[in-house]
Amino acid sequence: MVRRRQFERLLELAQLRNVEIQVMPMDRWDHPGTGGRIQVLKFGDGTAVGRMDDEFGGRPVSDLRQLRILELRYGIIRAEALTARESLGFIEHLLGET
Image (cartoon, rainbow, N blue to C red):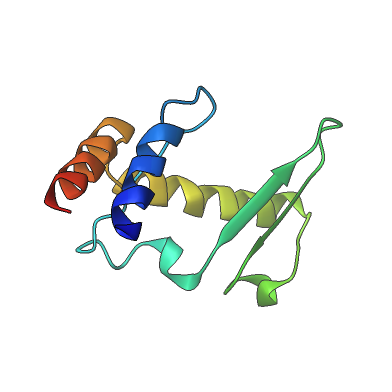
């Protein structure tokens, strides 16, 4: 029942304008996200800070070159994941199985 509610909640959130859900299939295990979370915060004044669990010692970085590395890795992850539409279909399929 908990799992079912989680799938329903994901589908609910996916309807929001500012939310896009992408699922990474289990058979794509060698993407850059396996090293942990990637976080990049961009501010209104044009500055940014980012971090990744296994990169740069896990410490926050603001150097443009290091931020670009994080953004490129994030882009690779998104490219290898299912599209937003495919992801929703996948979640709906899982919901139907629960």
